[in-house]
Image (tube, rainbow over all chains, first blue to last red; front, side, top):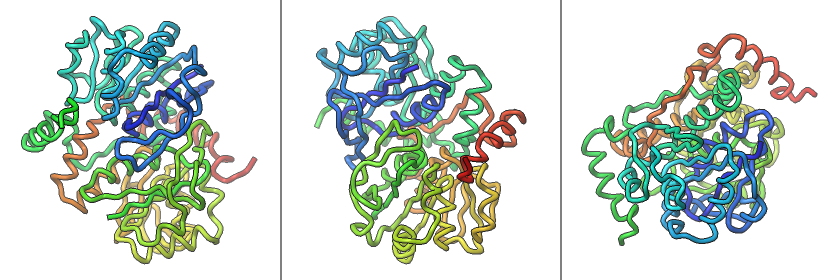
Length: 214
Length: 214
């Protein structure tokens, strides 16, 4: 079972690593980080580089595709080689997945038309223009398409998907292996739970970031 | 504020990325991945490489040190250049931290003597021989030493530390930014919560891994 995780400049690290740390522990999993070219891709802050061991042409039939999000997503919304590759491998995947604004790339590539999907809470309202129907769930299954909300939600998605693929016992063993017994010191992880002024501040601050406005 | 995250061969990715994704979002944070030599370090499965942009000698006075765990920890339990560096930077840090079996490295370097600490649940019983007192908490503060339990606990540690450093509002904004509103599909993230047979199986399977026995 091959799991392909896409990298591109300015991806958000945990978007990729959450599904990675869960799915790569499935029995028989072979995980590959793939990008337009092999080599190092810097993340959203620029302070971390992850290595893509494969180029798009090297990965033709992954069983699972994972598309992370991050500010770099903005550069991948136009049709072209990346979208063509996404569509080509999607034709053969068992599961096509995304975390955070990765769903905007999947949707822009035409894969989420008429489907229920999610994204980072700050980007949810961009889904309808791309043909998808946003939901407020943290992990959304619609057929073989699985989209997760912001950044850390990829861990929950990975575990849910592990359960579908390999059964509850394997998924629970993975959860125990990564000791995923979350105890956040605050209950501020969604726009409905965070103090209203923090949610409002982040909406304001992120407006130019998400739309590409300066 | 410089945050130094240690890399070494066969580290566990989320151990490093959990604290990274939270602490690197602190105002004024400058995060650097550091290792014995600059270049790419492969993780525990070998399927992902992270880049160390700095060598030990390049990082002399980080404000925060983060030591991740992973099976590669076993190769760093003897005194030598790495322990000497850890002790030298620890003399100047505001916070010295670890995730998972990273605490065994800190303890082996002599930094946790008489201190309360934690580690991956499968490694907790190794702490006393290294002079530390294991606790069942997910994140343990003892003075400036902060240790977190297995793998995913570094996210909780990062948020707790962000709160201590920059206040609750900033930490909550970071939590909302990474949409950390965990909804694990199972409640199996600790040895007490997982089905007993899964916990027992993992104890058995991991025995040789944690001790280095073949």
